[in-house]
Image (cartoon, each protein chain N blue to C red):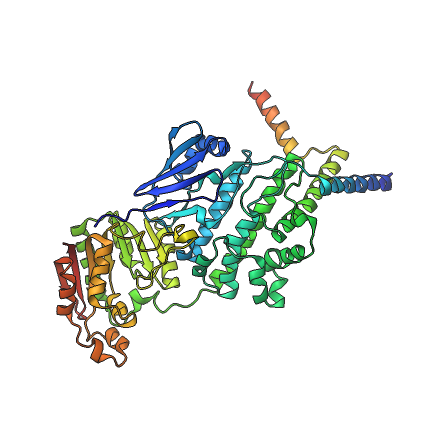
Length: 84
Length: 462
Protein backbone atom coordinates (compact mmCIF):
# COMPACT_ATOMS: atom_id res chain seq x y z
CA UNK A 1 0.00 0.00 0.00
CA UNK A 2 2.83 2.35 1.01
CA UNK A 3 4.71 1.62 -2.24
CA UNK A 4 1.57 2.25 -4.26
CA UNK A 5 1.07 5.61 -2.61
CA UNK A 6 4.67 6.65 -3.32
CA UNK A 7 4.36 5.62 -6.95
CA UNK A 8 1.12 7.56 -7.28
CA UNK A 9 2.74 10.67 -5.76
CA UNK A 10 5.73 10.43 -8.10
CA UNK A 11 3.41 10.05 -11.10
CA UNK A 12 1.37 13.11 -10.06
CA UNK A 13 4.53 15.17 -9.56
CA UNK A 14 5.91 14.16 -12.95
CA UNK A 15 2.63 15.02 -14.62
CA UNK A 16 2.52 18.43 -12.95
CA UNK A 17 6.10 19.17 -14.00
CA UNK A 18 5.36 18.13 -17.56
CA UNK A 19 2.33 20.46 -17.58
CA UNK A 20 4.45 23.29 -16.22
CA UNK A 21 7.14 22.78 -18.80
CA UNK A 22 4.79 23.18 -21.73
CA UNK A 23 2.39 25.71 -20.23
CA UNK A 24 2.21 28.96 -22.14
CA UNK A 25 -0.18 31.74 -21.20
CA UNK A 26 -0.72 35.42 -21.87
CA UNK A 27 2.15 37.41 -23.36
CA UNK A 28 4.18 39.57 -20.98
CA UNK A 29 4.16 43.31 -21.62
CA UNK A 30 7.31 44.44 -19.80
CA UNK A 31 9.43 46.74 -21.98
CA UNK A 32 12.73 45.90 -20.27
CA UNK A 33 15.01 43.23 -21.68
CA UNK A 34 14.19 40.13 -19.60
CA UNK A 35 17.62 38.69 -20.39
CA UNK A 36 18.21 35.26 -21.84
CA UNK A 37 20.51 33.29 -19.54
CA UNK A 38 19.21 35.12 -16.47
CA UNK A 39 15.65 34.47 -17.63
CA UNK A 40 16.46 30.79 -18.10
CA UNK A 41 17.82 30.60 -14.54
CA UNK A 42 14.61 32.16 -13.27
CA UNK A 43 12.40 29.88 -15.40
CA UNK A 44 14.35 26.77 -14.40
CA UNK A 45 14.33 27.71 -10.72
CA UNK A 46 10.60 28.47 -10.87
CA UNK A 47 9.83 25.16 -12.59
CA UNK A 48 11.77 23.19 -10.03
CA UNK A 49 10.45 25.06 -7.03
CA UNK A 50 6.94 25.06 -8.53
CA UNK A 51 7.09 21.27 -8.90
CA UNK A 52 8.16 20.88 -5.31
CA UNK A 53 5.47 23.32 -4.18
CA UNK A 54 2.77 21.28 -5.93
CA UNK A 55 4.22 18.01 -4.70
CA UNK A 56 4.13 19.31 -1.13
CA UNK A 57 0.48 20.39 -1.54
CA UNK A 58 -0.43 16.95 -2.89
CA UNK A 59 1.28 15.23 0.01
CA UNK A 60 -0.52 17.46 2.48
CA UNK A 61 -3.84 16.75 0.82
CA UNK A 62 -3.16 13.01 0.68
CA UNK A 63 -2.51 12.95 4.41
CA UNK A 64 -5.43 15.23 5.14
CA UNK A 65 -3.27 18.21 6.19
CA UNK A 66 -4.24 21.75 5.20
CA UNK A 67 -1.68 24.02 3.49
CA UNK A 68 -0.51 27.10 5.44
CA UNK A 69 -2.70 29.28 3.18
CA UNK A 70 -5.75 27.13 3.77
CA UNK A 71 -5.02 27.11 7.47
CA UNK A 72 -4.98 30.91 7.54
CA UNK A 73 -8.27 31.03 5.66
CA UNK A 74 -9.76 28.54 8.12
CA UNK A 75 -8.47 30.59 11.06
CA UNK A 76 -9.84 33.81 9.53
CA UNK A 77 -13.21 32.17 9.04
CA UNK A 78 -13.23 30.94 12.63
CA UNK A 79 -12.21 34.41 13.86
CA UNK A 80 -14.96 36.11 11.89
CA UNK A 81 -17.53 33.65 13.19
CA UNK A 82 -16.29 34.21 16.73
CA UNK A 83 -16.62 37.98 16.37
CA UNK A 84 -20.17 37.83 15.03
CA UNK B 1 22.57 83.91 -11.02
CA UNK B 2 19.38 82.15 -12.12
CA UNK B 3 19.14 78.40 -11.68
CA UNK B 4 19.91 76.49 -14.85
CA UNK B 5 16.81 75.85 -16.97
CA UNK B 6 16.57 72.10 -17.22
CA UNK B 7 14.58 70.36 -19.88
CA UNK B 8 14.66 66.62 -20.14
CA UNK B 9 12.16 64.15 -21.52
CA UNK B 10 12.27 60.40 -21.00
CA UNK B 11 11.12 58.10 -23.80
CA UNK B 12 11.84 54.42 -23.08
CA UNK B 13 8.67 53.49 -21.22
CA UNK B 14 5.81 53.31 -23.75
CA UNK B 15 3.34 54.08 -20.94
CA UNK B 16 4.49 57.68 -20.58
CA UNK B 17 7.27 60.19 -20.32
CA UNK B 18 8.74 62.63 -17.84
CA UNK B 19 9.83 66.22 -18.40
CA UNK B 20 11.73 68.44 -16.04
CA UNK B 21 11.02 72.06 -16.81
CA UNK B 22 12.78 74.44 -14.46
CA UNK B 23 11.67 73.34 -11.02
CA UNK B 24 8.62 71.38 -12.20
CA UNK B 25 8.58 67.64 -12.80
CA UNK B 26 5.73 66.70 -15.13
CA UNK B 27 4.80 63.20 -16.19
CA UNK B 28 2.55 62.45 -19.13
CA UNK B 29 0.76 59.10 -19.07
CA UNK B 30 -0.95 57.59 -22.09
CA UNK B 31 -4.51 56.75 -21.18
CA UNK B 32 -5.08 53.03 -20.71
CA UNK B 33 -1.34 52.28 -20.58
CA UNK B 34 -0.76 52.61 -16.87
CA UNK B 35 -4.12 52.13 -15.18
CA UNK B 36 -2.65 49.96 -12.43
CA UNK B 37 -0.05 52.59 -11.54
CA UNK B 38 -2.62 55.41 -11.55
CA UNK B 39 -5.00 53.37 -9.43
CA UNK B 40 -2.18 52.52 -7.04
CA UNK B 41 -1.18 56.19 -6.70
CA UNK B 42 -4.65 56.93 -5.30
CA UNK B 43 -4.44 54.09 -2.75
CA UNK B 44 -3.74 54.29 0.97
CA UNK B 45 -0.67 52.11 0.43
CA UNK B 46 0.81 54.73 -1.92
CA UNK B 47 0.07 57.47 0.62
CA UNK B 48 1.80 55.40 3.29
CA UNK B 49 4.88 54.98 1.09
CA UNK B 50 4.95 58.72 0.41
CA UNK B 51 4.64 59.37 4.15
CA UNK B 52 7.55 57.02 4.82
CA UNK B 53 9.63 58.87 2.21
CA UNK B 54 9.90 55.80 -0.04
CA UNK B 55 7.78 57.05 -2.95
CA UNK B 56 7.81 60.44 -4.65
CA UNK B 57 4.84 62.72 -3.99
CA UNK B 58 2.50 62.83 -7.00
CA UNK B 59 -0.52 64.95 -7.80
CA UNK B 60 -2.97 64.54 -10.69
CA UNK B 61 -2.94 67.72 -12.79
CA UNK B 62 -5.29 67.01 -15.68
CA UNK B 63 -6.87 64.29 -17.79
CA UNK B 64 -7.68 65.26 -21.37
CA UNK B 65 -8.92 61.83 -22.40
CA UNK B 66 -5.89 60.48 -24.20
CA UNK B 67 -3.21 61.91 -21.92
CA UNK B 68 -3.08 62.23 -18.17
CA UNK B 69 -0.64 64.69 -16.63
CA UNK B 70 0.90 64.13 -13.22
CA UNK B 71 3.19 66.41 -11.28
CA UNK B 72 5.86 65.09 -8.93
CA UNK B 73 7.64 66.86 -6.12
CA UNK B 74 11.07 68.03 -7.26
CA UNK B 75 13.96 66.37 -5.48
CA UNK B 76 16.32 69.28 -4.93
CA UNK B 77 19.46 67.69 -6.29
CA UNK B 78 19.07 64.62 -8.51
CA UNK B 79 22.11 62.36 -8.44
CA UNK B 80 22.99 59.37 -10.60
CA UNK B 81 24.22 55.90 -9.59
CA UNK B 82 27.69 56.69 -10.93
CA UNK B 83 27.94 59.33 -8.19
CA UNK B 84 26.74 57.07 -5.36
CA UNK B 85 28.74 55.26 -2.71
CA UNK B 86 28.34 51.45 -2.48
CA UNK B 87 26.14 51.94 0.60
CA UNK B 88 23.82 54.18 -1.41
CA UNK B 89 23.63 51.51 -4.13
CA UNK B 90 22.72 48.91 -1.53
CA UNK B 91 20.07 51.18 0.02
CA UNK B 92 18.55 51.72 -3.44
CA UNK B 93 18.61 47.98 -4.19
CA UNK B 94 16.96 47.15 -0.87
CA UNK B 95 14.24 49.73 -1.49
CA UNK B 96 13.55 48.25 -4.94
CA UNK B 97 13.20 44.73 -3.52
CA UNK B 98 11.15 45.89 -0.51
CA UNK B 99 8.63 47.77 -2.63
CA UNK B 100 8.35 44.99 -5.20
CA UNK B 101 7.77 42.44 -2.43
CA UNK B 102 5.06 44.59 -0.84
CA UNK B 103 3.32 45.07 -4.19
CA UNK B 104 3.10 41.34 -4.92
CA UNK B 105 0.37 40.65 -2.38
CA UNK B 106 -1.79 43.37 -3.99
CA UNK B 107 -1.65 41.92 -7.49
CA UNK B 108 1.06 44.40 -8.53
CA UNK B 109 4.75 44.29 -9.36
CA UNK B 110 7.62 46.53 -10.48
CA UNK B 111 7.91 46.18 -14.24
CA UNK B 112 11.46 47.54 -14.24
CA UNK B 113 14.17 47.63 -11.60
CA UNK B 114 17.12 49.91 -12.21
CA UNK B 115 18.97 52.35 -9.94
CA UNK B 116 17.89 55.07 -12.38
CA UNK B 117 14.36 54.73 -10.93
CA UNK B 118 15.68 55.87 -7.56
CA UNK B 119 16.76 59.31 -6.35
CA UNK B 120 18.06 60.30 -2.94
CA UNK B 121 16.69 62.78 -0.44
CA UNK B 122 19.69 63.18 1.80
CA UNK B 123 20.81 59.60 2.39
CA UNK B 124 17.29 58.13 1.92
CA UNK B 125 16.35 56.48 -1.38
CA UNK B 126 13.02 57.37 -3.01
CA UNK B 127 11.29 55.54 -5.88
CA UNK B 128 10.55 58.24 -8.44
CA UNK B 129 9.48 56.20 -11.44
CA UNK B 130 5.86 55.64 -10.45
CA UNK B 131 5.04 54.04 -13.81
CA UNK B 132 7.24 51.10 -12.76
CA UNK B 133 4.27 49.91 -10.76
CA UNK B 134 2.16 47.60 -12.87
CA UNK B 135 -0.42 44.83 -12.60
CA UNK B 136 1.09 41.38 -12.53
CA UNK B 137 -0.17 38.26 -14.22
CA UNK B 138 -1.41 36.25 -11.20
CA UNK B 139 -0.35 33.02 -12.88
CA UNK B 140 3.19 34.06 -13.79
CA UNK B 141 5.97 33.15 -11.35
CA UNK B 142 8.46 35.29 -13.30
CA UNK B 143 9.64 38.77 -12.42
CA UNK B 144 10.41 40.21 -15.83
CA UNK B 145 12.65 42.83 -14.26
CA UNK B 146 14.72 40.13 -12.51
CA UNK B 147 17.46 40.24 -15.14
CA UNK B 148 17.48 44.03 -15.15
CA UNK B 149 17.87 44.04 -11.37
CA UNK B 150 20.83 41.66 -11.71
CA UNK B 151 22.38 43.66 -14.59
CA UNK B 152 21.95 47.10 -13.08
CA UNK B 153 22.30 46.47 -9.33
CA UNK B 154 23.93 43.15 -8.49
CA UNK B 155 26.55 42.79 -11.22
CA UNK B 156 27.93 46.35 -10.85
CA UNK B 157 28.05 45.85 -7.07
CA UNK B 158 29.63 42.40 -7.45
CA UNK B 159 32.12 43.81 -9.98
CA UNK B 160 33.04 46.48 -7.44
CA UNK B 161 33.17 44.12 -4.45
CA UNK B 162 35.08 41.20 -5.98
CA UNK B 163 36.93 42.68 -8.96
CA UNK B 164 37.49 46.27 -7.85
CA UNK B 165 35.56 47.72 -10.80
CA UNK B 166 34.61 51.31 -9.95
CA UNK B 167 30.90 52.00 -9.68
CA UNK B 168 31.54 55.32 -11.45
CA UNK B 169 32.15 53.29 -14.62
CA UNK B 170 28.41 52.55 -14.76
CA UNK B 171 27.96 55.88 -16.53
CA UNK B 172 28.99 53.95 -19.67
CA UNK B 173 26.33 51.22 -19.29
CA UNK B 174 22.74 52.40 -19.00
CA UNK B 175 21.49 48.85 -18.59
CA UNK B 176 24.34 47.62 -16.40
CA UNK B 177 26.58 44.63 -17.05
CA UNK B 178 25.75 41.39 -18.83
CA UNK B 179 27.01 38.15 -17.22
CA UNK B 180 29.38 37.85 -20.19
CA UNK B 181 31.03 41.15 -19.23
CA UNK B 182 32.20 39.73 -15.91
CA UNK B 183 32.89 36.10 -16.84
CA UNK B 184 36.37 36.55 -18.40
CA UNK B 185 37.57 38.34 -15.27
CA UNK B 186 36.57 35.64 -12.78
CA UNK B 187 38.88 32.93 -11.50
CA UNK B 188 37.68 29.30 -11.79
CA UNK B 189 37.09 29.33 -8.07
CA UNK B 190 34.96 32.49 -8.27
CA UNK B 191 32.91 31.17 -11.22
CA UNK B 192 31.52 28.29 -9.15
CA UNK B 193 30.99 30.17 -5.95
CA UNK B 194 28.08 32.44 -5.15
CA UNK B 195 27.17 35.08 -6.11
CA UNK B 196 28.80 34.43 -9.51
CA UNK B 197 27.53 30.86 -9.92
CA UNK B 198 23.91 32.08 -10.09
CA UNK B 199 24.52 35.52 -11.56
CA UNK B 200 27.14 34.77 -14.20
CA UNK B 201 28.13 31.13 -14.76
CA UNK B 202 24.74 29.38 -14.93
CA UNK B 203 23.09 32.16 -16.97
CA UNK B 204 25.96 32.00 -19.46
CA UNK B 205 25.72 28.21 -19.73
CA UNK B 206 21.95 28.35 -20.30
CA UNK B 207 22.32 31.23 -22.73
CA UNK B 208 24.82 29.24 -24.76
CA UNK B 209 22.77 26.03 -24.70
CA UNK B 210 20.00 27.48 -26.89
CA UNK B 211 17.51 26.38 -24.23
CA UNK B 212 13.85 27.27 -24.88
CA UNK B 213 13.60 28.60 -21.32
CA UNK B 214 16.10 31.33 -22.28
CA UNK B 215 13.30 32.88 -24.38
CA UNK B 216 10.20 31.76 -22.52
CA UNK B 217 8.50 34.55 -20.56
CA UNK B 218 5.11 32.83 -20.51
CA UNK B 219 5.39 30.24 -17.78
CA UNK B 220 2.10 29.62 -16.03
CA UNK B 221 1.37 28.27 -12.57
CA UNK B 222 -1.35 28.21 -9.97
CA UNK B 223 -1.72 31.76 -8.54
CA UNK B 224 -0.76 30.62 -5.04
CA UNK B 225 2.38 28.92 -6.34
CA UNK B 226 3.21 31.87 -8.63
CA UNK B 227 3.10 34.29 -5.69
CA UNK B 228 5.23 32.01 -3.52
CA UNK B 229 7.78 31.64 -6.32
CA UNK B 230 7.97 35.37 -6.96
CA UNK B 231 8.67 35.90 -3.26
CA UNK B 232 11.28 33.16 -3.41
CA UNK B 233 12.97 34.88 -6.38
CA UNK B 234 13.09 38.20 -4.54
CA UNK B 235 14.46 36.49 -1.42
CA UNK B 236 17.19 34.91 -3.60
CA UNK B 237 18.17 38.32 -4.98
CA UNK B 238 18.25 39.72 -1.46
CA UNK B 239 20.57 36.91 -0.35
CA UNK B 240 22.96 37.80 -3.17
CA UNK B 241 22.79 41.46 -2.17
CA UNK B 242 23.64 40.63 1.46
CA UNK B 243 26.55 38.44 0.38
CA UNK B 244 27.95 41.24 -1.80
CA UNK B 245 27.41 43.75 1.01
CA UNK B 246 29.35 41.54 3.46
CA UNK B 247 32.21 41.39 0.96
CA UNK B 248 32.21 45.18 0.55
CA UNK B 249 32.23 45.75 4.30
CA UNK B 250 35.04 43.23 4.90
CA UNK B 251 37.20 44.62 2.06
CA UNK B 252 36.82 48.35 2.54
CA UNK B 253 39.71 50.17 0.85
CA UNK B 254 41.99 52.20 3.07
CA UNK B 255 41.62 55.92 2.69
CA UNK B 256 44.14 58.73 2.50
CA UNK B 257 41.58 61.19 3.74
CA UNK B 258 38.76 59.71 5.83
CA UNK B 259 40.50 60.29 9.19
CA UNK B 260 41.89 63.64 8.03
CA UNK B 261 39.57 65.90 10.01
CA UNK B 262 40.63 64.26 13.27
CA UNK B 263 44.22 63.21 12.64
CA UNK B 264 45.65 65.96 10.42
CA UNK B 265 48.96 66.98 12.02
CA UNK B 266 48.71 70.56 10.75
CA UNK B 267 45.45 70.99 12.70
CA UNK B 268 45.58 70.83 16.48
CA UNK B 269 42.50 70.72 18.71
CA UNK B 270 42.40 74.51 19.05
CA UNK B 271 42.59 75.04 15.26
CA UNK B 272 39.77 72.56 14.73
CA UNK B 273 37.62 74.10 17.45
CA UNK B 274 38.05 77.60 16.02
CA UNK B 275 37.41 76.41 12.46
CA UNK B 276 34.14 74.76 13.51
CA UNK B 277 33.11 77.87 15.44
CA UNK B 278 33.86 80.04 12.38
CA UNK B 279 31.82 77.79 10.08
CA UNK B 280 28.89 77.97 12.52
CA UNK B 281 29.15 81.78 12.66
CA UNK B 282 29.35 82.04 8.87
CA UNK B 283 26.32 79.76 8.47
CA UNK B 284 24.35 81.92 10.90
CA UNK B 285 25.23 84.96 8.78
CA UNK B 286 24.32 83.18 5.54
CA UNK B 287 21.21 81.34 6.84
CA UNK B 288 21.28 78.97 3.85
CA UNK B 289 18.61 76.44 2.88
CA UNK B 290 20.77 74.63 0.35
CA UNK B 291 24.46 74.10 0.98
CA UNK B 292 27.06 72.53 -1.28
CA UNK B 293 30.09 71.20 0.59
CA UNK B 294 33.00 70.88 -1.85
CA UNK B 295 35.69 68.47 -0.70
CA UNK B 296 33.40 67.41 2.14
CA UNK B 297 35.62 64.53 3.31
CA UNK B 298 33.80 62.61 6.06
CA UNK B 299 31.29 65.42 6.52
CA UNK B 300 32.29 67.28 9.70
CA UNK B 301 31.20 70.63 8.22
CA UNK B 302 28.29 69.14 6.25
CA UNK B 303 26.85 68.00 9.58
CA UNK B 304 27.26 71.48 11.10
CA UNK B 305 25.25 72.90 8.17
CA UNK B 306 22.63 70.12 8.31
CA UNK B 307 22.21 70.53 12.07
CA UNK B 308 21.36 74.17 11.37
CA UNK B 309 18.54 73.02 9.12
CA UNK B 310 20.20 73.20 5.71
CA UNK B 311 19.82 70.58 3.04
CA UNK B 312 23.41 69.62 2.17
CA UNK B 313 24.91 68.08 -0.94
CA UNK B 314 28.44 66.90 -0.17
CA UNK B 315 31.00 66.17 -2.89
CA UNK B 316 34.25 64.36 -2.43
CA UNK B 317 36.44 62.09 -4.52
CA UNK B 318 37.50 59.84 -1.63
CA UNK B 319 35.18 56.85 -1.39
CA UNK B 320 35.84 55.72 2.21
CA UNK B 321 35.46 59.30 3.49
CA UNK B 322 32.20 59.70 1.56
CA UNK B 323 30.97 56.36 2.93
CA UNK B 324 31.62 57.67 6.46
CA UNK B 325 29.64 60.79 5.63
CA UNK B 326 26.78 58.68 4.22
CA UNK B 327 26.74 56.37 7.26
CA UNK B 328 26.69 59.29 9.70
CA UNK B 329 23.90 61.03 7.75
CA UNK B 330 21.77 57.88 7.92
CA UNK B 331 22.51 57.18 11.58
CA UNK B 332 21.88 60.76 12.67
CA UNK B 333 19.03 61.23 10.19
CA UNK B 334 20.58 64.38 8.75
CA UNK B 335 19.66 65.89 5.39
CA UNK B 336 23.03 65.27 3.73
CA UNK B 337 23.51 63.62 0.34
CA UNK B 338 27.16 62.56 0.09
CA UNK B 339 28.25 61.99 -3.52
CA UNK B 340 31.43 60.89 -5.23
CA UNK B 341 32.03 63.98 -7.33
CA UNK B 342 35.07 65.94 -8.37
CA UNK B 343 34.69 69.69 -8.86
CA UNK B 344 37.82 69.67 -11.04
CA UNK B 345 36.47 66.92 -13.27
CA UNK B 346 32.69 67.06 -12.94
CA UNK B 347 30.43 64.20 -14.05
CA UNK B 348 29.56 64.72 -17.74
CA UNK B 349 26.13 64.55 -19.32
CA UNK B 350 25.28 61.04 -20.53
CA UNK B 351 22.82 58.95 -22.48
CA UNK B 352 21.02 59.40 -25.77
CA UNK B 353 22.09 62.67 -27.40
CA UNK B 354 23.87 63.49 -24.14
CA UNK B 355 20.47 64.52 -22.82
CA UNK B 356 19.26 61.69 -20.58
CA UNK B 357 21.49 62.45 -17.61
CA UNK B 358 22.52 65.99 -16.86
CA UNK B 359 26.09 66.95 -16.13
CA UNK B 360 27.03 67.67 -12.54
CA UNK B 361 27.37 71.39 -13.21
CA UNK B 362 24.09 71.66 -15.12
CA UNK B 363 22.43 70.35 -11.96
CA UNK B 364 24.40 72.69 -9.73
CA UNK B 365 24.72 76.16 -11.26
CA UNK B 366 23.10 78.79 -9.08
CA UNK B 367 21.21 76.24 -7.03
CA UNK B 368 23.02 76.67 -3.72
CA UNK B 369 22.64 79.68 -1.47
CA UNK B 370 25.89 78.71 0.21
CA UNK B 371 28.95 76.82 -1.04
CA UNK B 372 31.62 75.65 1.42
CA UNK B 373 35.14 75.03 0.17
CA UNK B 374 37.26 74.12 3.19
CA UNK B 375 40.75 72.63 2.87
CA UNK B 376 40.37 72.22 -0.87
CA UNK B 377 41.79 75.28 -2.59
CA UNK B 378 45.44 74.10 -2.53
CA UNK B 379 44.37 70.83 -4.21
CA UNK B 380 42.66 72.75 -7.00
CA UNK B 381 45.62 75.12 -7.40
CA UNK B 382 48.51 72.67 -7.18
CA UNK B 383 47.16 69.22 -8.14
CA UNK B 384 44.65 70.35 -10.74
CA UNK B 385 46.55 73.49 -11.80
CA UNK B 386 43.41 75.62 -11.87
CA UNK B 387 44.08 79.38 -11.63
CA UNK B 388 42.68 81.34 -8.69
CA UNK B 389 40.54 83.50 -10.99
CA UNK B 390 38.92 80.34 -12.39
CA UNK B 391 38.26 78.96 -8.90
CA UNK B 392 36.59 82.22 -7.87
CA UNK B 393 34.40 82.27 -11.01
CA UNK B 394 33.48 78.61 -10.47
CA UNK B 395 32.41 79.31 -6.88
CA UNK B 396 30.28 82.23 -8.03
CA UNK B 397 28.76 80.02 -10.69
CA UNK B 398 27.51 77.60 -8.04
CA UNK B 399 26.71 79.95 -5.15
CA UNK B 400 23.76 82.29 -5.43
CA UNK B 401 24.48 83.85 -2.03
CA UNK B 402 27.48 82.91 0.05
CA UNK B 403 30.78 81.06 -0.03
CA UNK B 404 32.71 79.88 3.02
CA UNK B 405 36.30 79.37 1.93
CA UNK B 406 39.56 78.37 3.60
CA UNK B 407 42.70 79.96 2.19
CA UNK B 408 45.80 77.78 2.57
CA UNK B 409 48.94 79.95 2.53
CA UNK B 410 52.15 79.01 0.71
CA UNK B 411 53.90 78.44 4.05
CA UNK B 412 51.40 75.74 5.06
CA UNK B 413 52.99 72.26 5.35
CA UNK B 414 50.37 70.77 3.01
CA UNK B 415 50.89 73.52 0.43
CA UNK B 416 54.66 72.87 0.58
CA UNK B 417 54.08 69.09 0.25
CA UNK B 418 52.12 69.65 -2.91
CA UNK B 419 54.45 72.25 -4.45
CA UNK B 420 57.01 69.54 -5.34
CA UNK B 421 59.61 71.86 -6.81
CA UNK B 422 57.17 74.21 -8.54
CA UNK B 423 57.88 77.25 -6.34
CA UNK B 424 58.41 79.40 -9.45
CA UNK B 425 54.85 78.78 -10.56
CA UNK B 426 52.92 78.78 -7.30
CA UNK B 427 55.19 79.97 -4.49
CA UNK B 428 54.14 83.60 -4.96
CA UNK B 429 50.43 82.92 -4.35
CA UNK B 430 49.34 84.72 -1.20
CA UNK B 431 46.20 85.95 0.53
CA UNK B 432 46.28 89.18 -1.46
CA UNK B 433 46.18 87.21 -4.74
CA UNK B 434 43.33 85.10 -3.35
CA UNK B 435 41.38 88.23 -2.38
CA UNK B 436 41.95 89.90 -5.76
CA UNK B 437 40.40 86.87 -7.46
CA UNK B 438 37.51 86.47 -5.02
CA UNK B 439 36.58 90.15 -4.75
CA UNK B 440 35.64 90.24 -8.43
CA UNK B 441 32.62 88.12 -7.45
CA UNK B 442 32.25 88.35 -3.66
CA UNK B 443 32.48 90.77 -0.75
CA UNK B 444 34.36 89.68 2.37
CA UNK B 445 31.98 89.61 5.34
CA UNK B 446 33.96 87.57 7.89
CA UNK B 447 37.67 86.73 8.12
CA UNK B 448 39.58 84.77 10.72
CA UNK B 449 43.21 83.65 10.86
CA UNK B 450 43.67 80.32 12.61
CA UNK B 451 46.70 79.69 14.85
CA UNK B 452 48.10 77.35 12.16
CA UNK B 453 48.13 80.23 9.64
CA UNK B 454 45.18 79.19 7.51
CA UNK B 455 42.61 81.90 6.87
CA UNK B 456 38.83 81.43 6.83
CA UNK B 457 36.48 83.69 4.88
CA UNK B 458 32.74 84.15 4.69
CA UNK B 459 32.11 85.76 1.31
CA UNK B 460 28.85 87.24 0.05
CA UNK B 461 28.09 87.21 -3.67
CA UNK B 462 28.09 90.60 -5.36
